[in-house]
Length: 162
Image 1 (cartoon, rainbow, N blue to C red):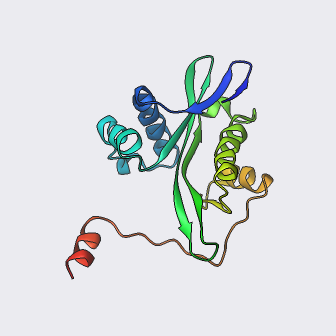
Image 2: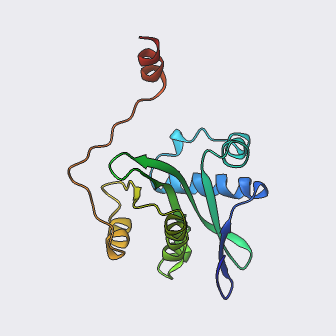
């Protein structure tokens, strides 16, 4: 647990599910993607705490949730080791610029170190200049040579059925 006066970062617990969903919705609003959120408390609870599909950290200031990170393990055939994929990191706007995002990301980096992960990777929207500046200030490199692809819904079903 990282602590700094009234600020802590800790592993999320099942009873944090409502707060995590609320923060996910805030992130979606910031990214102008609210209409894409289909997660519910039950879905998150099952995925994070029963199935163990991903891990969640929550950050609090004076006992109130103000940020979160969700990550999972991927695998690199080139290194032969697991890496960490950071699905989301979010800090409420009024808490930004105080080092809380860095502390939250640092906690994920500690997990990478503990598990001997040679890589941490994540995506960032092209227009999100404040986040890009933040990530690059930490030494993160933008990978120009890679392109992200996604299949969803009907396209998955179609491919699975062929």
